[in-house]
Length: 204
Length: 204
DNA sequence: GCCGTAGGCGTACGGCGTACTCCTACAGCG
DNA sequence: CGCTGTAGGAGTACGCCGTACGCCTACGGC
Image (cartoon, rainbow over all chains, first blue to last red; front, side, top):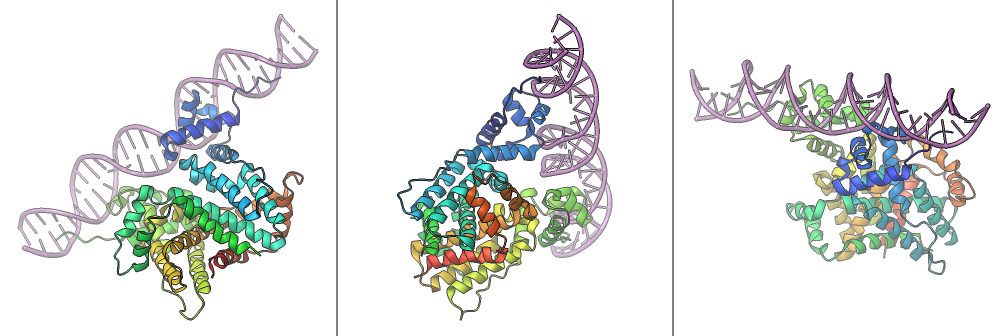
């Protein structure tokens, strides 16, 4: 009997993501999203209770783009977890400005839970269960979350490496030296290198 | 020749942290901090260029409270890294509402760099160097950062576990089962359990 | 005693989230 | 056919926010 809704929450999310991708996270506001959709600011409240819920939709949109289907059953479990981690990293990297949101709203996201479910499945097949599995999931979750953030809201465009290089060498001998040898290592090696350390610790 | 400053940046930071601890991160504003110090809102701008810099001071204050001196030289390196991780975790946990700030501003914090310097020293003594050390530091950094966040801005007060428990069991079999077995595991076991996985992977 | 800087306060602007009101358009019921 | 209830859409308004700017006062070293 009611008049049909003319927008879906998904369309709201897409508009919000468009604003974020184009103008940065700071530009995200009820007003800018409404403008993006060609409607009045208050119109948004027909679809969403408040700004917080809008942000949740953004996260769902971003995480919803990562494939949560279990990868190639033939491969060793470590490799399959690497694939899952890489998918999440790639999905988030497609909207780097939204990274802070994905962290704060992840726990309410169905898409995030689907990712966890698949990882848990892989861990189970690897023979890890009970308390060990809880710890393993949290560890993976923690590492992936943290590493992705370091990658994206770390020192913008190598500014940080410059800061470190400018440090007084006598008080920070290891850091300055490490900064020099860090040049040869790309983001991929860093991310997956660290992940493999964790996976190695999980083995046996 | 000039009139001496009547406040230090440290006092600003302390006032801001007091506001955050008492009323939450959302209550942090130039106006509330000024009120905390008994001065006019604009007075803050004598000590700080903008809100961003104030937030930086908060982070410096929080991270400055963690002891960065190398721990007990006698202990095995893994244990010493655990001590460093625990110190950081404890320092941050003293001001849980400030956690989001510590993440976004960490790379500009001297105290954060001191922590990294000490950890690098321990890694070096453990015989890890060159590219391996770079990856190891980033991995530790990523894990600790991520795990601390999961702990503090995870589902507020077990709300998340309830969400998971309410999940359709047929679509999330592992998650629902894991949620049940997660009850017996406290935050400490989770944090250090995950960390030890990483350290084990680092070994040899 | 003078000068220059810090202190301190008030005003003002533009943007934010959002509460509230008022009218219009339409889908299914009788 | 018309009635009714919900969605659409616009507009106004409030109380926050960060912060630009200006004005006078206090005071320490030359």
